[in-house]
Length: 101
Image 1 (cartoon, rainbow, N blue to C red):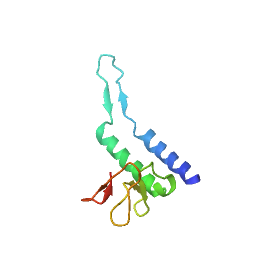
Image 2: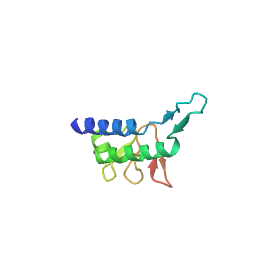
Image 3: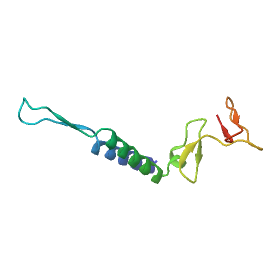
Image 4: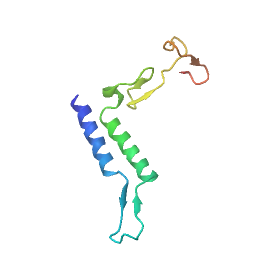
C-alpha cells in the first residue's frame, strides 16, 4: 500500500510539473502564448510509465481482467494460449500470435 501511495505521489508531481500553461504579456493587445502540448505530453507519459514500472508495476497494482501481469516487465498484457493453456471465458486463442483475444 505504501508503494502505491509513493507511485501516486510521484505521478502527481510529474503531472503538476508538466501541465500546459498560457502566458499573457502585460500589454492587453498582445496575444497570449501556450506552452506544453504534444511533445510535453509524450515526455510526461513516458516518465509516468517509468515511475509506475519502477514502483512495482502490475505486480503491486494488478491488472484489469482479462489482462495478466508479466512479472518480468511489470506491464499488463493479454494472456498467452496454445498447448495446455486455455483462454479465459469469452476470449479465443489467436493461433498465429498465441495470445488470447
